[in-house]
Amino acid sequence: MSKILLKNFLVFLIIFLVIAAIFSTYNASTEKPEEIGLEKLISQIEDEQVTQIIVKEGRLEIELIDGTKQISKKEASESLTTLLKNYNVDPEKTKKVKIEVKESEGFGFWALTLLPFLIPFILIVVFIWLMMRQVQGANTKALSFGQSRAREMHQKGKAKITFKDVAGCKEAKEELTEVVEFLKNPKKFTSLGAKIPKGVLLMGAPGTGKTLLAKAVAGQANVPFFSISGSEFVEMFVGVGASRVRDLFKKAKKSSPCIIFIDEIDAVGRQRGAGLGGSHDEREQTLNQILVEMDGMETKINVIVMAATNRPDILDPALLRPGRFDRRIVLDIPDINDREAIIKVHAQNKPLAKDVNLRKVAERTPGFSGADLANLLNEAAILAARRNKKEIEQIDILESIEKVLLGPERKSHILSEKEKKITAYHEAGHALIAHELPNVDPVQKVSIISRGQAAGYTLKLPVEDRHLHPKSEFIDELAVLLGGYMAEKITFGEVTTGASNDLRTATQLAKKIITEYGMNEALGPRTFGEREELIFLGKEIREQRDYSEKTAELIDQQISYLISQAQNTAQEILTKKKKYLEKIVKELLKKETLEREDFEALFQPKKIES
Image (cartoon, rainbow, N blue to C red):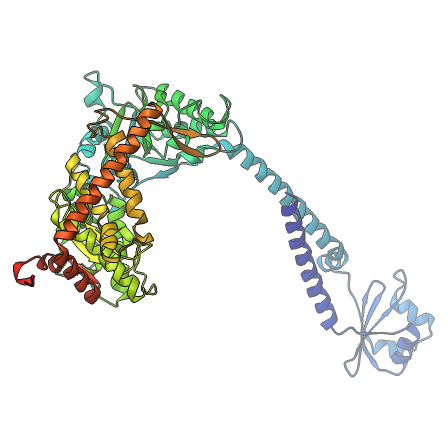
């Protein structure tokens, strides 16, 4: 508040100085008449130099024959005529002077008299009034501190989002259709005694379209949509979050029927009792108020609460019980058909070339969410613009996939001839083993051009989406991961640090095969270790052992056995197919990048030298 007062004081000081400068300039620029004494005035009258005298109480305004103006003063109680008689001025000469008596003008007199005092007074009054207004504004802000900051959205015209704008998510849209029907025609359900769920929880990985789907429900039902983030409830002062929750539900009831959407509800909906703070923790107070408002809502008020989270495992059980968020909708990563539909939606306002095949783009993007696909097309548009193209071509989109997955090309990162050769053998080892083993995804591209932190890369993509993975697939994948390591060892007799990430990934995969998937005969069909999340001055994932030291030793032995088995498989393939390895390396050193067609052509009989 002191800063605001100082700021306003400086502003008014500057204004006052400007006004004073203007008045002083005006006064300085005005020519002031010469002030003379009565003796000189009488002398000028006797010399017949005066043509007019204007009398304003004790002030005499004199005008001479040559136009010169002068002023003089006399006693206000004595008239000018009497004064001239007392000075024995010739009456004949007095008659030649035009004497005019004027009363002082009211406005001008008072303005000239009071203005020097009135202006500072007015400025002080205005200054005090503004200060009072600032204080009242601060009080108002303090009172509105507990009001909800939810943004009310009324979707109209082209900005309106409906289910047509959401590609994929078929099952989720079917579930939410009931919510739309209830908002439009609640009597259809209440007449049969049905109660629509008060809370709908959208769960899914980041970027799968939870927020977009909530907007589509509001647009489809054509009702107000209150949007707020879970973190906007929480402040450093206890009770503010709960107050904002109450205010939010109060506004929603006035706008009924409507939808309240709480994004990232895990910010306030975490399981109570975890971490620091007891029952008076601000976050827990906010959660308690949400629970009360949802369970205490009147059944006749058509307000539906929708929330989104990608961490449903950490939510408080009280949020998920019937009467609150009792309907849970899972949004999965889109499959190939959904990805193609999503890409078409995001490509509507982008000029695509005739050679663009969106189906192939969908095939090359397994595991991409809706947000990833939107980012992919945006990167492709930026790349096409950088190349001064008028349309987005297929090559732009394919290169953008690699940029999203691995990072941009590091053209300035030039490898030496020796490192380039090592990288070529490393990537050729991955690619060759992936081609030879039956349970590995086909190789789409092999490159020794640096991207991100990788000196080179081998891109493998599945032909179709898979949700279940057998042990044979993992065993073959281990051999592929060790392919680069073994190619370096066989060719150069030693390995480099380039295989460190492959070895780390292979070790983690082998551990999962044993401890999570139960795919090891020696240890049997069970899991080992329990992962729990600790929230204490931050986030920490800790694995709690539920097995003995002897079992831990056996797990280590089995991990080493799987790695050793994969190493032997990779060595056997690389030894038997040495000529193919050399062929791939030769082409990589020549072209730096091999697409799937060029890579597959290397294994045709006509390409093999006898």
